[in-house]
Picture: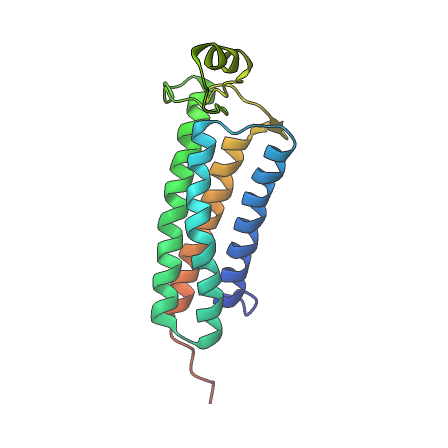
Length: 171
């Protein structure tokens, strides 16, 4: 391995990519691309892994290889699950298998049946099987799968580097 690839740099890269990815999701949502039920579930691995990645950065600076390896391993498992969710969602979008029957949309507490019926007429249901946006030909679910696979790989490399014994200096 090169001297450029260190546990600290891997942890920082995972942290920055994860923060950028979830930030991008929030930006698209703010731009009017409402997330479907699966999109919201695909964010959960990021919410779990971002604090772990920050912890990994801290542990890498403290020289705690055992704890750092465990942290990287947890991140790898979390993003592997995130990749599976992204692949599942992409398959739903392509019609390979059925998606969940849940739907999302704002629905306020109605004071009467008529108010409730009026709300139902204005609620936009976000379907999991329809792609709201493609970026360079891929849906956001497909991008999430690709990013999650990459972060899983980086975390796995982090495990290996954390457990590697330092080489003895040449005589």
